[in-house]
Image (cartoon, rainbow, N blue to C red; front, side, top):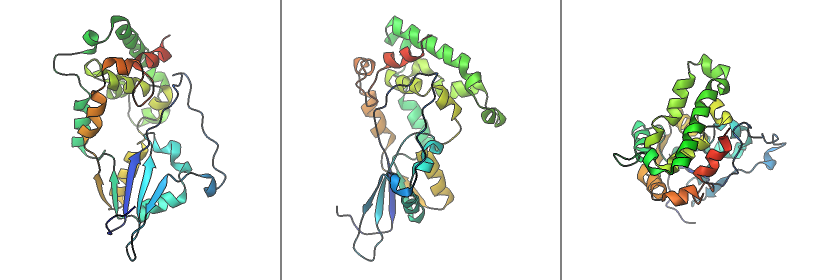
Length: 247
């Protein structure tokens, strides 16, 4: 691989992977702590330049709270991040405009809502499931979250607010994040955001390699049957996810 020489770069991407659905009453099983650095997968690729220029790096991330995976990231990957002067992410999650665009792109066209779009039975199951999650939210929250001033209603609205106006594919992803373990980790930044915050704190130059539209348009281009049948990149559909939480 040939790249133009220059300052050291550290590029982060998201590893998209299919996962098996979890029952909402179960917490994800924790992996055993690694016994040594050699037991860890670095998810780090090096791009070498001719001397005297330093190398660049490509690092694969995952969209989960960083505390779940930080101990499994080897020192070689952390050193590459620390010594790089430029860090580029998939999206700039520290930019309010990026967050605003991500929120807007999830909405249905003006005048449409899920009640008129989804089959009646599926809509009722979805609403019943969200009512259940809202009821359980106070029991799922941690003492630390309450100590930081988070309230169950606020947390529910932060995750599921305006859900009837969202496109089915985004509702599918939203429901996927409304599990007890995910709720209990709210307030802890995902790995991408944590690294972006660290890069900013360390005075590194940061940026993004994608625009919001490049992420939204492929997902928004899926029709309802593709979302329902589980042919999205997550590997499973809206009706399957909702079925996990029916009680």
